[in-house]
Image 1 (cartoon, rainbow, N blue to C red):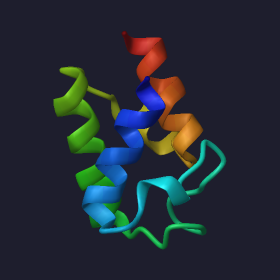
Image 2 (cartoon, one colour; image 1 turned 120 degrees about the vertical axis):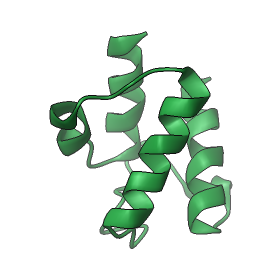
Image 3 (cartoon, one colour; image 1 turned 120 degrees about the horizontal axis):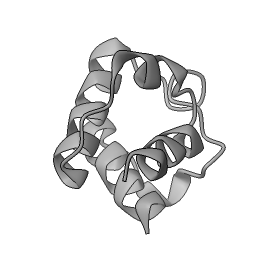
Length: 75
């Protein structure tokens, strides 16, 4: 469930096909996301789940799977 929502957020921010995103997809290397893109994705995730990720959690997020795990630990 979380994966599909996160994929939709990423696809919207980066203007890419959500089907090309997997849990192993990295934001920087695979998707070419820059710091602004990542900020927008994190903001979208926080808004979608009504949560707030601390800086330490955000710094640990390298892959889409990391983002899913961060949400699961907060929820």
